[in-house]
Image (cartoon, rainbow, N blue to C red; front, top):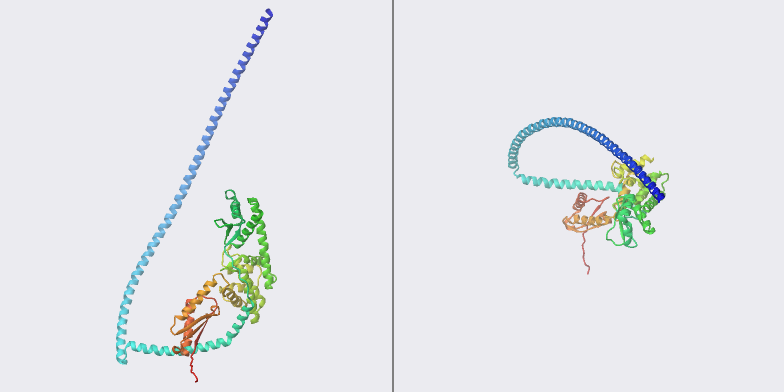
Amino acid sequence: MNGMLTAAAVVTVFLVAVVVVLGLKYRDLRTRTELAKKDLLEREEIMQKEALIKAKEALHNEREQLNEDERERRREFAQIENKLSKREDLLESKIQEVTDKETELDKMKDQLIEKEDLLAEIVQKQTVELERIAGLSAEDAKRMLMEQLKSDLAQEQMQLIRENEAKIREDALEKSKEILSTTMQRCMMEQVVESTVSVVSLPNDEMKGRIIGREGRNIRTLETLTGVDLIIDDTPEAVVLSSFDPVRREVAKLALEKLIQDGRIHPVRIEETVEKAREEVEKKIMKEGENAAVDMGIMGLNKELIKNLGRLYYRTSYGQNVLKHSLEVGHIAGMLAAELGANVYIAKRAGLLHDIGKAVDQTQEGTHIQLGVELAARYGEKQEVIHAIEAHHDDVTANTIEAVLVKLADAISAGRPGARRDTLEIYIKRLQKIEEIVNSYEGIKQSFAVQAGREVRVIVQSEMFDDLASQKLARDIAKKIEDELDYPGQIKVTVVREFRTTEIAK
């Protein structure tokens, strides 16, 4: 029993000791916690004070800067106000000068009116006196004089016309007809029509959603990389590509066709495909340029000129493929040069390069003639070629036979019916307008626009026209056509006066 009491006393003492130790540690921990909180509060207070001081400094600096800006603006406003004041003074001075001049002009006008009235009175008196002396009225005398003048002038005019036409016909007409007809028959080239849009066929309408992609990321990537607008509308199984740059449009078309064929359409794949398509188009451009040079028989062209020639394969002008047009101009110019004994090589080279500026005129400032001259000069073309490029639209006067031939070949290639997209409709309207102009004259029996609008044949009523009147009618019709129509080349007017007498032998 005593042993159990002793053990209980020992346990009690131990527990008391543990409680005392724990109490001491708790008090020490509490003291430390309070000290840490106090230290933390002091630090926060110091940081707040420092932040407040920095904010005040920043505010002060900002205020100083604003004050300085305001002072600067006030100085500028003062200077502007001073300039405006001076301009106002100058304007008032000029207004006063103008007012003084208007007053002076009004006085001079009044004086002129008085003089005109005086002159009119004198003329009236002289007219009355002349009528009294001549025994004719002013209207009668004027009519007689005009009739005499018309008769004399008509005779002289027709005589001059006959002499000039005979001389011109003897010198150039037959030869020029022979040369042009021979050349145009030898050179007949295909004309390719392009537009500003391309259509890509789709295997099904589901492909449109894949092309657009989640939240439009695929179509945005394709448009960003190619610079082409993709139009996806209700058109079944088709996507429209729109761009003014035919090279970009071709790259986008080729890339989209590859993506549709591959089936994997996502931004990374689009980027890779566009890059491959761009490389293929660049190779195609170089190949077309080289083929054009070989076809024309032109050697030694700079690679950059060949590349720009290839770019013309994707360029159109009024619906006419510019590379095909350039080849045709080169061939025609070379044939004309051969017929006339000029430099065939220069004519063909200049004809091939005459529109080279159109390869870059959509991305650079300047007309296609200015850009073409710059390109030709930069890449070492001869002065004769550069001059022909510069003169083919009469920007400068052509002073070599080759330049004249290139200009003529350009007009032949562009002006004949079917060469350009809008030419058929305009061509038909031009023929109708020619016949309408001819039929507006009295005494016309029939009229026919022939030779693709290059000639109009007029059949007149023989009893209303003699030889002199027929010549005058042809001249009047030609003048009216020149005044009212725009057309390439020339239009020949032929007036036919036929007199038939029929008798029956019994």
